[in-house]
Length: 289
Image 1 (spheres, rainbow, N blue to C red):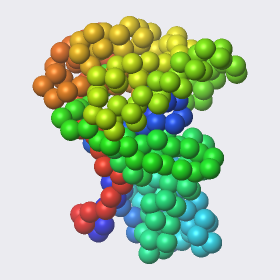
Image 2 (image 1 turned 30 degrees about the horizontal axis):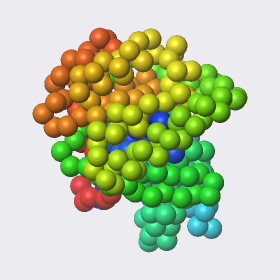
Image 3 (image 1 turned 180 degrees about the vertical axis):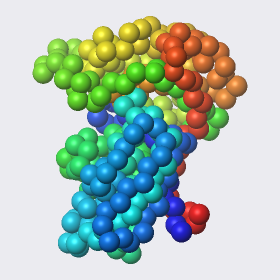
Image 4 (image 1 turned 90 degrees about the horizontal axis):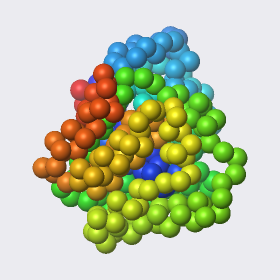
């Protein structure tokens, strides 16, 4: 039976709020087959139940976008992506559902269509885009547009994943309605550094590119010690460090061979949680199981 793999993702990359993201080598795995009624069988991180799950939601939206009636599906999902930790678990589920619709239609959506439908469901594209295209991606939601960026060799992500959740709606609520012009300029300049550094290979510029004034300082009270942890990771030699998505995970991009020192720097922040070391991931793909 064909098995679908959809990667975990990190959004924002610090300065690129709702615009930049990257895929991780940690994959939601999904199988599906026709059924008399929608059935959802789940194992992995957290508890997810019932036919109103995000994978079925993405599948129905994908079929509707094609002008087709969604047939009932039995969906089996294994999910190693931590829930509500800023690693794109919701986006992976939505992309998986839309990708199921794409396959059921013989590929009529294509990757661009999968991105467009999933981004519309998510409301922002920075997790959905890397889940579809893999690697680093710059993306817009309106109009829907995603452009993959170069993938540097010899780097990995060290992730400090605390034991508590930060729901995205709560993190969104913490953001101000208005920001000073100087803070907007600060972030615009640094978000532009991400693609410049990746295209030029000047990875040392990422230490400045990941700096942020638009969202991380305003959410820090939801994640005690998070800004200090970012500073410690950079001081330990990370190329970049930032809150993954809405948090609370702290992600550090490091050169191979420097993972251990950065992981030690993040030990206090992760507490009773975990440290993960992951490669940059691929966009969704299928394998015969």
